[in-house]
Length: 256
Image (cartoon, rainbow, N blue to C red; front, side):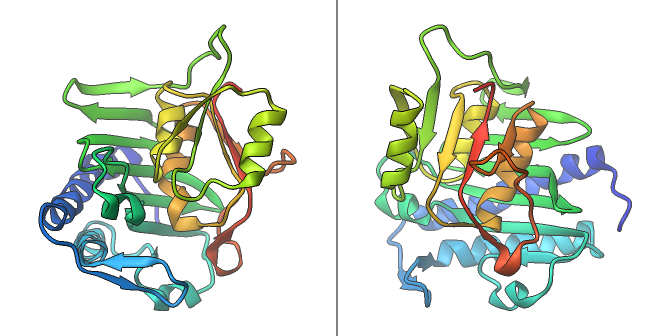
């Protein structure tokens, strides 16, 4: 494995995510052309422009770490190594296409080491919220208020608040929320769900619908670095480098 200085890498990667976000917003502010992948999911010029920006700069900054990226299908055929990046240049494409004013789409850069997400950068360009974290530095948010260290919060006396998917919420998620007597739920797209738990705006994120590892790695790293955890519904560890980089169900926990 490449010896990594997490602090130095986190000095560089937020700007990479910001540059990718700039490419996304140039397209967002104009008419958006949509194509569809073999699995029926949408892909836009914004996905492709953001990925091109990230891959170019990542290879300049740290060339010896392999990259698995959503829009680079050939990278999906490679076996996971002990150390690799997972990139989703535009998570929440459906929310991006809605232009609903919520801005819940993100740029995601995650580092996996021995199956565990150890570093992550999540940037929501429409909201100008940047989350960045590593296992050695902790987690931070940069916004109009400046840079602040973030941590999961104690569960409010009024009860836990969950975050759940806008576009992919299913009956299993609804049942879990009901079984756990969770009355307040924030519906939002993309990896922002992990980040809202990490920064203390919510307490738990249950996910039973399908996701890929590049959807979750960066946000997962932010949450773990903020004191949270991610596990399978049965409590077993949620790890990376799985077959075809496909996730099963998981629960992302703050203090709940």
